[in-house]
Length: 340
Image 1 (cartoon, one colour):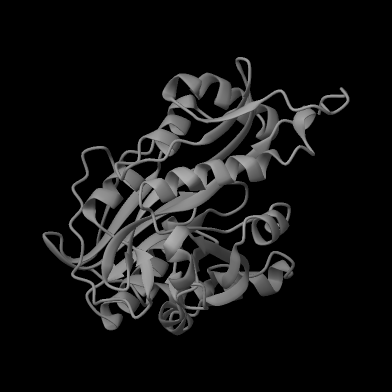
Image 2 (cartoon, rainbow, N blue to C red):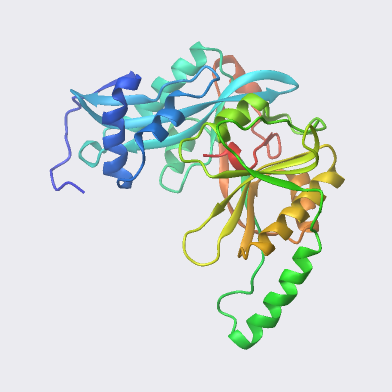
């Protein structure tokens, strides 16, 4: 962190970014979160969503980007109507420019553009540092909790080896019982053609509009994305589809589920059990899924998933839609890839 004294008089201006700002934006990401984030990834995330993308609001001091507030334009189904909303994803301020109300200013600047375009709402999962700002200064409502569901596939690391070995064998044997010989698994590439199951209408008031176009941008177009597609049934008319990624960050890998669609609850549960069997066969330590969907939670318990904490789901409506925003628990449902 810089040792310079914080700037006391703002000399930055808020504006909507353009692609030519990417190098400056990337430099700020490197400053705040460390290097290693490819610039083409930021271009995809911040500018390339094919759903009326709202550019990030940036604070520019000359040629320097010293603050960013970014949302991802997200198609929604709200009360059976297809509308546009956005997910709040990145908020950051250069260390030398803190305590100037920059993040709030940029967020409001961004929201004004979203409202001008007719967007209905913004949602997100703020961390503990940004939570007070969203709730107190940006008029968000803490609507729900997004639960981290975990299906363990290995004994806890703290268990002695003489106990862990037989328990691991038992866990693996049970997990593999969900195997489905009709399942197909393939890597997601830029050429992947997504055919989605005919999913029953969600009981929630609001959810992300799961279209082939959404899948193509969210998974096939992501630079450096490492997703796989798991299908039950005929690939041209699937009974169930799961998008997942295998995370390897030390220790046994984890299967992180991003999408989980099926023509019925029965097929949805069968697909998850089959994915668990796949994870066991790969030597994974767990299968993980984030969601606040209560119906999904019931099925996950049936597949021996356990809730392991979570994160707040907050949102606010724009303009005339503020009063009717889905701010009560269960009214807005998110799952896996619906969060950044």
